[in-house]
Length: 343
Length: 73
Image: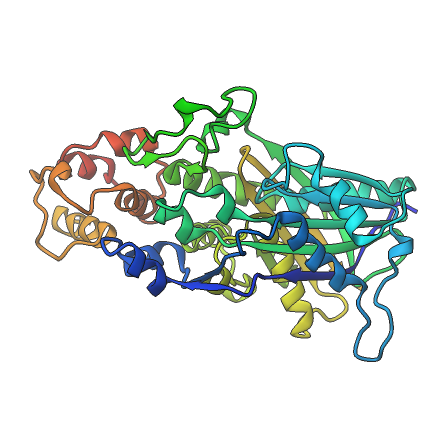
């Protein structure tokens, strides 16, 4: 009973691609070559302004329930008894996006539904909670959906964040019965003292939106940022990621009785190239065991890890016995790691 | 690593031509000394010297000589 598996995984990317060249035309003073050296990003997807996060989530989740090439249903909606949505770009301040998605997917009204307000660590946190629900017997099948419409949270004048972040949604079905990957033991943690380092200052009860939140203010580096939109302190996030990421992975390895050499793939949150390289260097991991997709989709927040997982599966790289370690880190500041064994 | 080599690493990190910097160079006068340049420098010091530098220290650098002090081996 105390086991949990990922039964299916899928994702949705908006059709519109925005290349570095397109951004450079909009911001002639911006140097895309220099930015690419740090991040490794060449393209990102941007969702249409009139498509809300719940619609993106629905498009990713529906793929879980489509019929496969042999016309066999991959999974049945009637079996889902819990829905977890990870997002920071909810359709509304209330209700939570999971409630909207439950109705949109046509899930039974006996389905539990809640949001997790986390970013880059959110998918792994979702797996941890889904495993707990499945392993305890509280739920048999849990649909975990990550969705981030970052383009909605970033001011159009902020080329740095528009460059880094991409829109996406991803879904995974977690089951107590069977699946292609068994979820192992986890490590997680929070450093709430760093809450300012990735932040939308205005719009909550601490700073309601008003006239004073319309004007830009200077961030720690002297760049003008709008209080109603996201801001990020790059250097603080670099230091946080290269400290907490490797430590969390080491802890997850220990909890799963794994040596680094036994792990086939490390699925790291795709923050940017220099952070991924720094974590790989700290752990002395061969880059071949760290799949990277940031070049084409950018930093997709909570979606980056399930997108990597889905691509590895579709590429036939997840044969039985393979071991994976997943590690997400970001806003909060928050981090989480877990292990998967392909069955 | 000699001082010349260290200056060369700083030039490379923040995206300047070789020979652009001296220890006396005023960082505030450089267009490349922006948040991206500072992040590049932070990651270079971490990679080359294994040292975690507090971002407030990086933001406080006024001259190349101050960066060189942080690159001591």
